[in-house]
Image (cartoon, rainbow, N blue to C red; front, side, top):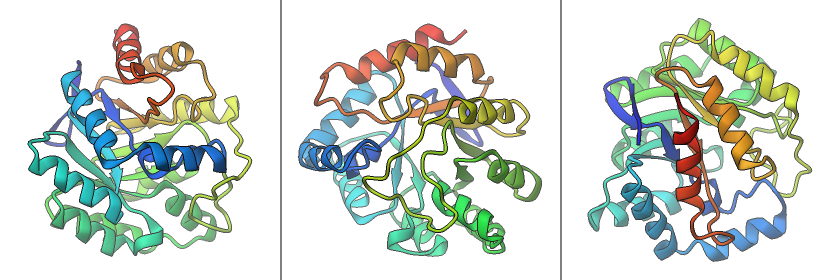
Amino acid sequence: MQYVQIGHLKVSRFILGSNPFSGFSHQSIEMDDIMRHYFSARQIKSILRQAESLGVNTIIARTDYHIMRLLLEYWDEGGTLQWFAQTCPEVGSHQACIQRAANYGAKAVHLHGGVMDHQYHQGKLDDVPPAIDLIHEKGMLAGVAGHIPPVIAWAEENLNLDYYMCCYYNPIPRKDQAEHVHGYNEAYLEEDRRAMTELIQKLSKPVIHYKIMAAGRNDPAEAFAFAASKMRANDAVCVGIYDGEDPDMLKKDVDLLLANLK
């Protein structure tokens, strides 16, 4: 495994994502349900331990009660992955999520990409700088996520961040709502991928590239080759997996990333 430095933290260049654990397939309502049934606590912890064995040292996961309870159990059993927490609007405000992340041992927090997109469209970003300040006050690294380049560009100009979460695609319009819509006919456009990766080259802080495989729509070999070609010295990728289709999926994905990194 290769590692980068984000703030004071050593972070694996492959970061385990967790959307599938909570039934966010970004494919269909039926697949959402399949993932919810498949990902028992035992199965999730098995994947976390497999990630450890491959040199992965970081997981990105939501500040919801399901994830926090699971991580607590995993750490109590000797797990070592560090948690980069994502705020989640359905269970509270920025401040409430940040406090939960601090209480449950997160090393970093980033504001939810859908919320950032929505607040940008609505012109209501005044509460973002205080939220970033609160993350730092709690001793954690601070970041923001976004699905559209203008959100990330605004953050670069206006916030004191430690990292960015940059989505390759803008699959769901967030102008009227911040939260994910299960079953929405999501769009994954090459023009969006190009626009975001062009912006990434200009950013001053490390970037975690995510949705590089368009939620299972892109060929893995092409997706990792493209991402590796756009990653800078201290960048990483976040990838969630559904190994119900392939028990070796995580290892194959890690191997693809490492094979393509220079």
